Image (cartoon, rainbow over all chains, first blue to last red; front, side, top):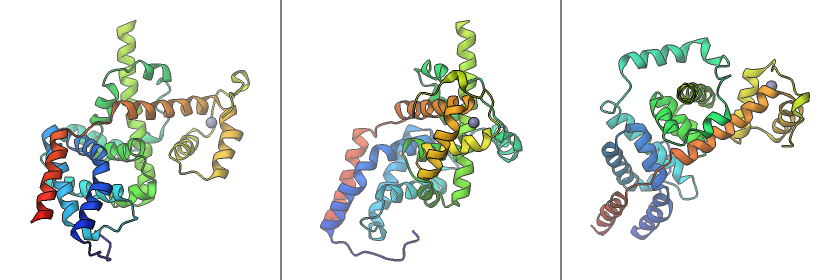
Length: 194
Length: 90
Ligand SMILES: [Zn+2]
């Protein structure tokens, strides 16, 4: 934690902070853990570790600051330190493909002329969930933080320890990749219906 | 946003990359009021690709919100509460 200030909460205050500020975010936190690890058992362990850690370091949480962002940052760091290696990362080939894509100029081209709102409305199953999970974890993360959890760019920068400019460009690329996946599904569905 | 006259809209966007970035900033709540008004009034209502993109971006966000959230298993929630209250008691 970067905060130098440390509170000295009483047991009662700790309990109150934990219940009123930390527990209300447990569903969002579970979803984040699950989307990072892509494994229900790892997600449970990661969530539990994170909440116990949050409790242990509760004195470095300042009341009145954003508890959700604070918790998400702990979860993200726990994931990187303890889970990233054993989680189901995309295979090496996929990863290299993503990396070269990440670094190419091509990502900025207009890539989804054929994805239409109507096609999205046909995606009543888990297509979008599968598409999101198939993205590289860094891209997946920014979409979760922004589009699902509504964090501001500045909060995301703090949670991820990256500059705001990187948040913005990663988000832009992540959305392009997601749309590309979705238009693949749309095409497949189109063939099926034809 | 008003419903634009579709027949009078431009079919090509000369600035599509910047437009998409601005569109996303607006939807993310990160654009200033000025940027927002300027883009929505001066551009979006006259530009078909951007107008379509706007609706696509909104639809993807809605789909994400309805399809990609989940609930923590109750047993796990109870377990976390229990472990923390034991720590408090000790
Ligand atoms: Zn345009």
